[in-house]
Length: 336
Image (cartoon, rainbow, N blue to C red; front, top):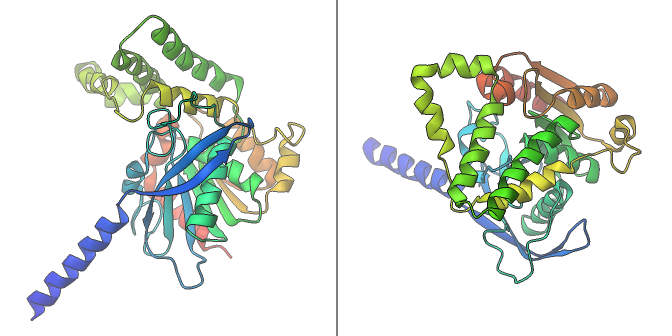
């Protein structure tokens, strides 16, 4: 009897895990973009983890990072991970342009794929949460890198829609340094297309840029000394059938224009007044991809809680201090 009960428990557990990891889609219809153009028949991919409580008050939105898909986030979710799925109902949303949600690679309409913004990503997520999932209020939103941009933008666009926001590896506003990086990547794509380069060769060059800037030189040299350089080279060759150079370009353009102060006289102080959610901002002092200074300045303007990581892991600093970040995030979520 005990063995049968044990096997039944395992079966139910595996059913739950499998169900949580299933890719789902919400059809939000025609999405009017900030540009005034229409994204036809917009589909938003998402996955859910944990259980929504009876008060529907424990939902946390987790938008994806640049080039990321909802499946990539699974490893960060769990009782001993970044966010505890035994306490919260996590909705991981595929950001527009990532190849899962409506993107250049799956857009079937004849018109060219329109340019999108971070604000457009947020609007699609808001419609999904409110109209498809029927959740009227979020407990929190958390996002890293481009996900942090969505978290900041969401907190400004819908200040009454959430209690807390946790942008990590974060940026409320793109600086000229990031625009140089993004311009380089955009030039790799546009010049490659113009010169008839193979898609995989274009993506390889983009991967090299990302590997160059994702960590600090000290971290790269320590973890990948010259006799292990082949391990880094393998990362150059990574390609995706759904996240092509066209998707790169779409999300790069979205990040290029990211600035939560654009409607607030370019002032952090005025943008901060718009936000009602409690903020916990996590940045890396050694980040080479997203300058941490704007996030630190915004934390000061908004009186937000901030954690500055001082390791040499660069943009990937949270992953290098997962225990600390998990602990501090849980403390923040537990605060009344």
